[in-house]
Image 1 (tube, rainbow, N blue to C red):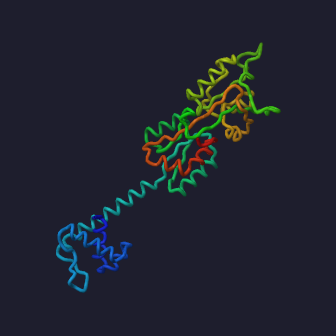
Image 2: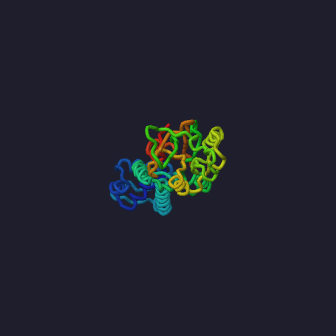
Image 3: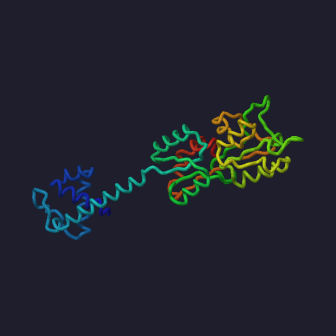
Length: 293
């Protein structure tokens, strides 16, 4: 039996002085309230109400138990309220810094409608991982190899200049020309989002195979620095199509290799991961600039 429900009916009927009004206060039928109280009396081993009177009167047992029952009901309701607040509080969701504000806002709206309120913050991958470890964030998307990814984002090369009749740039095109100083050679900038073995190491190997100098492939400590060099010196930026569009750059496929930025959901507890992915997985993919697997 549901003891708490029985005590709630007992307290409400006692307070209202009526089975009918007590049941209304509990939001149940009178017959349900009567049955709950009868079950509670069987559990306790004695009657709580004197049923020989026309009025609702407590027995001595009922009078003795009423203060404790009232405290129990109050505690139960407090626990329910506390649980509701915990389950419906906004969860901090860490996303990449390059995600578009509008996409993140639409994701937040959809999550709210699905009763999964989110507080979205953006940060680099290492910071996002640290937030999960320390409990600052409950959820985060983290870079993973494409084979393990829930969401996949195709990477290409972002350039300041359009290339006529071509959708592809070969990395070998920035190889240092004869007589050109190393400091003047164009560079490929890798964002911190892609400073992972499954992306960085493949780009480095490709650079070596097409005779790029080690200094021509560089990790960008800040995106603004990389974009400045793209605009000022004609460098290239490893980026998604969405990122290139947001930055006002032209995006091209990489001629020699296909690179995929993979993401999976990482969480502090794992309790609501599946619910979030089912309700908002496509919008998360949009915010990341890719697609669901």
